[in-house]
Length: 192
Image 1 (cartoon, rainbow, N blue to C red):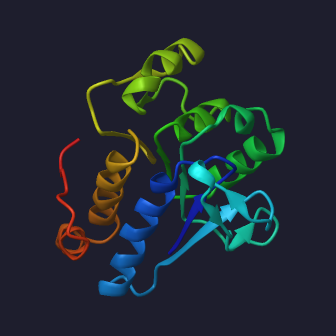
Image 2 (image 1 turned 90 degrees about the horizontal axis):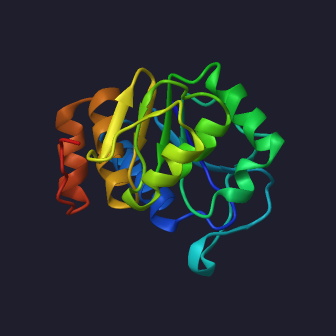
Image 3 (image 1 turned 180 degrees about the horizontal axis):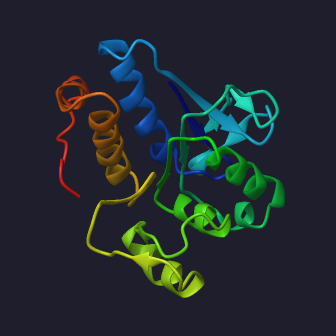
């Protein structure tokens, strides 16, 4: 199974590194056939929040098939206006079994018109602007993550880690998710 995490300039560091750690730990412990990678629009280094430099494994042009797409949060406004990015997200959505967002990554999924009339969430601070920008969404403001069909959206940072552990429990087993949380010395909030 291929798990692709989309990153971009000013992405929130723990929004991508938290899920990356969860899934790569699951792979190390038991899910040997999982392939976890970072994808950016190009193969150039990406400067995430705080000046954190990261080199993506793949670009839009050379990545393998994606079963699970994770779109992270950060300073997302410029990304919302990139037609190439939105077209790529829509294209991946046609074959991915799960499409997931952390924090303000939900804005990109909504802008790509994937979430109309679905239940979603985001970081508490961004709830009002999400409601205002996308009135067709059913925005939930008191959950760490929300599932609606193949889509899962979460709040920011630690909520994204909780949601990733939940996804491990669905893709593999609750036992593995608990083992991953224990290995990471992370107190998993199992319920949204």
